[in-house]
Image (cartoon, rainbow over the protein chains, first blue to last red):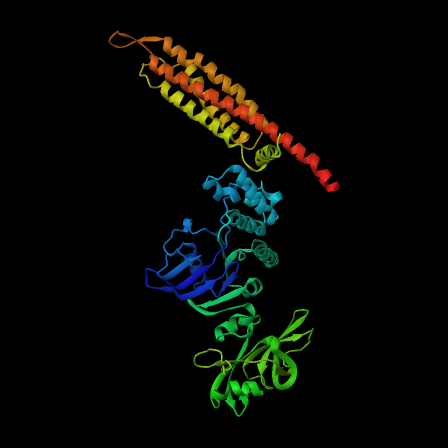
Length: 360
Length: 172
């Protein structure tokens, strides 16, 4: 188990492109941190800097209080699991898992015990004498994890380990990673662009965009109280709806919207009276029945829920909106539906930051 | 036998289920290497047309066959195929028999050169070297075979024990 401290990390490549800006975070013992963000946001670069595969341009990296900023990858006592598994095709599963220990010239009997223990955890015992080509994608990824486990490292690093798997296998392997984390109680850093993985796996999520950390928090914090429009739009599926509205006399108004604010929201938006803000509403926070009208464009039945896509306003000329209604709905194109917003998020239009209640 | 020794014995045997028989395989490869040294060193003496005979042709063909067979033995014994280890025994013995072929014939033969001087085809040092290479090659092959057969038998009996134990576990 390990405690990791990232202090003002920057990554600037030789061509002056900066991939990571001022990354700060404290990872506690046994925590599972998920770095999430779109492609090119710097999450994999950050992980590779931690692993020692990329140089750190500025800042400090401490593992259990020891400065490892300049330490070579082999001396960092971290194990990394890659998206493409990185298994040796000519070796059996056993040999793949034992490889790092063999390089360290460990006693073969000790290697045997460690490999079998890891195989037991990952349910790979019956596959040990097979070659990677004889395994499914999920099993190969488990072998890659097994190779990390046998080393008993201080820190596990996962770089989009489920991206090569199909949707069904991704779900089951995700649960296995979660069980593994609970069983090993190890400190893990996990990179993904899939918000479902982030929300289901993480103790804390680091949401990144264009090299900047947007928000660090628990999955619930990111979902419930997004720090800005980027986080609000990235976390949640389908994504949050955004509307430009004006705060006027305790109401939010636009050409197609008029929403009455409660006392708490009124107080929160007091400073914005007469100004335009961005209103965010999650599709699942929209209910049927209310004063706001939408015109249905398409209807997606998912069994338990129905996604209704439409445009605000009875004439259907307003902003696009997605609603997630409970149950099976049979709306047709052009139907007029009344909706209400059960929960709203407010964002400053200029800074895109969330408008939070002022602390007294 | 103590519990610890029993456990170590079990681990040693069980490891064979997952690990290749690298020792047997590597010994067979070493046998090929020393055989190569042997036939390279045969040509070390410049002795006119002494070697231009049918026997040398046969020797070359045998060397090619030897390398092919022993390579297959190396691969087969790596994955505990006992048949390949059995093949290694006669091939290994033949390496010793080959001492009676070219090394001995060339060592006892003489040839007259253009200046009418008579010289030995193969000197003592070269003879010793070629014999040594054939011996090492033969020993490696016999060792490879012995280790391969021993490990194969041990693995087979271990697998039988495991198989016998598994229905009991199911019943329990």
